[in-house]
Length: 88
Image (cartoon, rainbow, N blue to C red; front, side, top):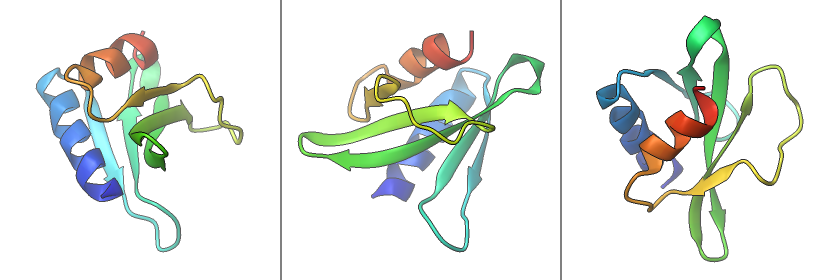
């Protein structure tokens, strides 16, 4: 399910003109890398929570996740929300 949500988000972001790359590490969950202005890369993951799936993100260099950086994966405008929150 993580893969499916990330692929869908990747396509939605590409439609908006945002560069994306799906990373499939040998160990660990899949990650969607989003390139923003200035070659800054943001890593987005899909996480299952009690009420459903969410996308969380952090800069590539960051090791800590902030709990406030997420959006529900089933939101109609999830790509727009991520672009406004991450690609500013």
